Length: 399
Ligand SMILES: *Cc1c(COP(=O)(O)O)cnc(C)c1O
Image 1 (cartoon, helix red, strand yellow):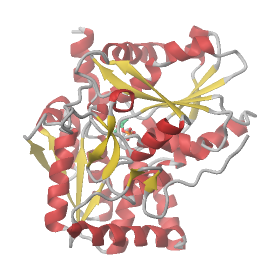
Image 2 (cartoon, helix red, strand yellow):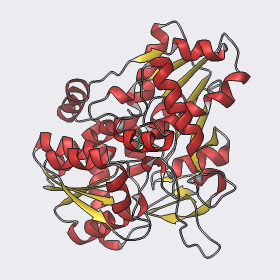
Image 3 (tube, rainbow, N blue to C red):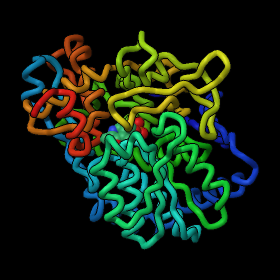
């Protein structure tokens, strides 16, 4: 059964979520961006440049890989991996950055700012800024600069300025606060490249659209294998961009079960997790209304995840809507389970996944026993694990 899905509305609401909760000074920039984005959809020069960069610079299409040994292990549904880890810079982030950077150029902004957690969005932004010749400043929590040092070094080499952020938990939320502060101050000449489906409208819609190339390619690649539609789609959820990118092109197809996997950190019965949709309540953070980890007074609570890219107390507003409507199921996986999944995929398939991605992979242990041999599961392999080797080695006690 198909029903039509038309989110967000004209003002950027996904049901009651989303919107533009920003200081007045940013309203003009958001309108300017929305106009540029709307115009770019029908601008042949923009579209050509965008698709050429996706193909020749980012390396698209990425393969849809049949994980035969992982499939054998569970002996149920066939497991396919959408190889976003093979994108230039090592994760799906670059799909969105290329789109936003071309919009920045079109609007005529000279200075690029970005926030980053795992450093993957910062690296993608620094990379594309170098390619198009724009100045790039990346805000990153001090704690994240420590656990993702290889990415800090990559950004420096690419010519970006890294600003370590010492406030709060020194992670992604705090880096985002600083980036927004910079944006408010320098909005005239500055373009804020947001790394996930978060922030004020039009970002959640725009980032979803840019990442939807993942789901469109997946559908095409399945059909080349005579699979008309997958039965399950699984992806990890930090802000929610790689998951919505995979899900969105299938959203009207009710026969597809979609599962977003959040970080349960040390466990959802502890205070140390990032399971925003599982345990949060609606509130405003970073320009939109969405599920949020907050205390009884509305103070944002610190999140915890072993993976810097999932260590965020908020989530994109569209996921909040998809949770409430029941269209997408949200589950969570602990630090320990995700580490196990890193080792498993490395040794069964010869692919070292990012710790973020490993959360989606770890959920297969719960999901696969409920599937049957004729069914198809697609996991979004959002990124590669090189950046996490330090953490992984420490935690798995290799020497
Ligand atoms: C940033 C990142 C994520 C989390 O962000 P989403 O917006 O939820 O996709 C997941 N995986 C990797 C590899 C990342 O770099």
